[in-house]
Image (cartoon, rainbow, N blue to C red; front, side, top):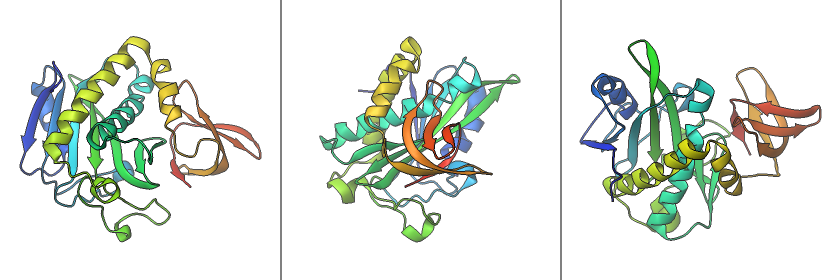
Length: 247
């Protein structure tokens, strides 16, 4: 069932749903989901291209926000938990699913979904947020299309046998997101943090986090109250606000 209070629009083709969010936000009065059945210029984190084979999912939730930027950024955890719930709902299983800090969903060790947050401004304020979500529903991009060292792309269909269309998946995801957003607004990050950690990939294992300037190798201890990745390294504990993580 579609969640009350959220708009819905489906486009046959679009450059990117986050770009469409920028175009429509001046006229919005409430949250709006945008689904692009074909996307010609999708983007991932740090401006990377996001490949979209036919039948995959590319959508953006345009959400009004009123919190400080560091709180708004925690919507990546809201979205990843909603994605986890949606995958369980459409497949009937949770085995093999894990959440990779800061904003990917893994299935059987491969990347099946990614999240991209971008602030949007109206009237001189950053009072809206675009939550871009890409899911390999039907097919995974070729491994040659991802950066060296990145996790292999996988699809929902190849890993579980579940054939789910983009519009069906959006309905399931929108309902899950609405539930998690309500929990976040009511209880803050504390209400989500433990649920996220219970589903975290490689918690307690040695991982590598690369920022634009530094590389940290250490044991993934936790995610702190601000959403930072906390590693126990040879030089002590490091709280990292933004990085690419490699296993």
